[in-house]
Length: 488
Image (cartoon, rainbow, N blue to C red; front, side, top):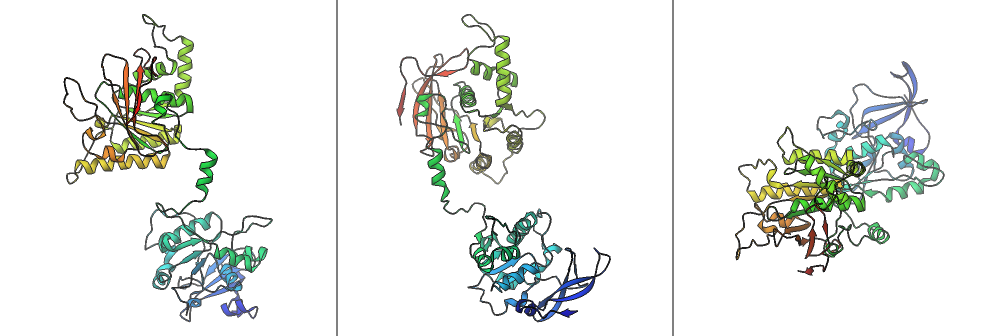
């Protein structure tokens, strides 16, 4: 091997030249030789062909970081460790005055590992010097800006700890876009390389967020001060609809919980083009389709004493609209567990782009509560999973739950609230919006919508609204004479 007598960086790194056998070329090939030293001992040599990008390592060599001995004497409490993707980038940063730099020995992996394994040969170099690397409080990942580089950055961060890692963004603006340190040096000079290192951004950590300066601007431009209209002006005073939230709906059996939620979904589909996955255990699918179509058209399916039924044109119109906006989740062969339900809902999000999910009711889901878990803990876990699904998929979820048996007061059933739902106070605690549907007179047309809870003031506020229910079409409307609404 011939050692280079070139510039100071190459001399200090003892880069050399050699004719080395490369399997890619099938013979001895002129190569640049990068010696790997560890504690002053030569433990490996990496060969790169002068023409093309062919690589080989010394047979039996130790797999370690390139540049390890440059860390001698560095104060790990005040200095950052910089990790790059190749020997050339390590030497590039040396040229820019940055010597606390290591290169991975074998480039970037093609794919992200499903799990982190201590036996992964690709990352053996991390294990050899784990104590030395682990002493640094801050690590800058300055790998290539491309697909493999992104994979390498993620793999390094997973193993080294995202809380101490930041990522360098190489220049992407102007006439010359750069994917690594060497291209940046050649195109923009050493000052820009150093600026990129200084401007490295902390890697995002799931669940931990810094103040986002774009939020106020985005909210000001979008004007998001309330959610979407429900379709009833009186109800909008107290409740609007936003993605990523959970509404818990309760009420005495036969007081119209499902009917009201169906009417609300029809309004949202008509006004805002929302799409829904309906998991309604108490509705046969054909009857559910009929109810939704009648609410949409405001016409009963068949002729009645006072109203004409749907024409063939009406039915085609309803079918065209319904196919676009509604899909149905039916547990025909499997027990309807929460795992099944959320799995099917995810399919609905992916295939149909649904904005809303209706689960009606809770007691029809198959539950398998562990013996060592209280009902309160179990309900909290279920609602937590449902809320996370809503947030992660940007859907609004309506969860219907029956109250426990109530006692009549003066011959009349009281208005239930969220704390009357059987099982747990978590129905009230976890809900973003809490509704009670109540008919003061079971034979009358008036239906009271009690907005018991609204978590976010930009969505609404607690109150009560009275709507008129049309038994023929299933539609709800504002009372003809006066609107009954009042603050709580």
